[in-house]
Image (cartoon, rainbow, N blue to C red; front, top):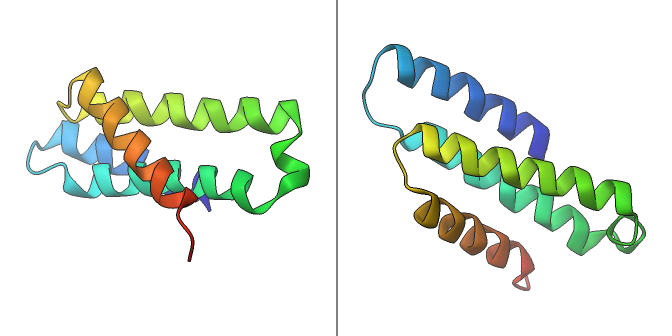
Length: 93
């Protein structure tokens, strides 16, 4: 699911860059990708212990920072938004 959301965010960003408007869709898909990637590690202990999977999740989160930056968000705000999305994934329920 995280990759699907990351792909949607990338497509949305392309549209935003061609015809500037509001970047909400790009940001929503990007943060959902970050949240889903983090959730995967939370829910699957076997994957959380796998270095390759952790590296892949790190790449998703890194791409998320870049996508948010493409919408005009500064790096500090992008990192904070991703941290908040990741924290939501860590909350019970």
